[in-house]
Image (cartoon, rainbow, N blue to C red; front, side, top):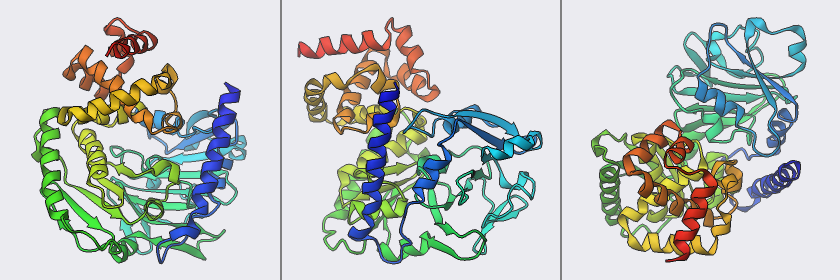
Length: 421
């Protein structure tokens, strides 16, 4: 196990180094570039124990606790101790502390030194008030001993995890959008700030309005001929996927899609290493696409629709596997293609791939097809309704057990089936 963790850690560090070297390729104008502050984030987690500090009287939701403890994937996970602020002992302040919860419920001393103003029901930054329950911020101090992951409410997914915060020293999030990012010196002065709304306004052209989504295309993409017809086709895709999921398309929140000229530019706008973006990225109701590809747009939009209608699976394997499997409803060719990929890479399908860390899944593009065929087989065995219920409630293992399998026997059964096709 230690050898596996070491291998993953080395791979991740190499990928991070490559991704941050990209700033010399095509950094969009006006950006404060990402730099080695990702090393601050890694240093913070290079400890045996992390104390997660909660405001007094605040109870963290179980799913948030799981998400916080699951953030580290490049090394053996530290032990997490959850403790309310007034129960901290003197010795605790010598440890690495992660402040989690609404910032306005902590003591003034706990938030001292941050670049944010703490308000009655939220926070402020650069003269702008952030009082919505979905507003949040992330900050790591220069000593890599304190991380602040503060969200006003409780119902929105943790943005710092979705964006894998660490490429910048601080972020301000509103829902699924980065509003500010940047760096801070030891005091509140001398800040380097990306004003993301202004950067987006300068980079993208006018909005193209579809039935279910708003599209923004990089101004540098000159050939947009036929895009309006593609939008009509996209509207049909959304309607069809909603029929498959048995959900009223009118109930799906309107979402936004950004098209970037290059993958490197996409990386800067979502502040993510290249290995985590690949060709596109979905953050709930906001999707980011490299190039003017409607196929990738549909893939990412499918994640948005599934997330809204059913919920986002915590496992990358089932998140991508179910999304891939829904394509088979529209296209027999998509199924046949993935089946051939599965046959060629069926040795990839292991219990570890299904239940392990996301980084293991994203090592190979072929794992999308592998997960799609496996998920399709599970849907056929269990029925779509039972599968979607297990997906929503994160009880896939129980579903498999109820069918009389464990992961390995289900894998073996699928491999035997496909060998005879």
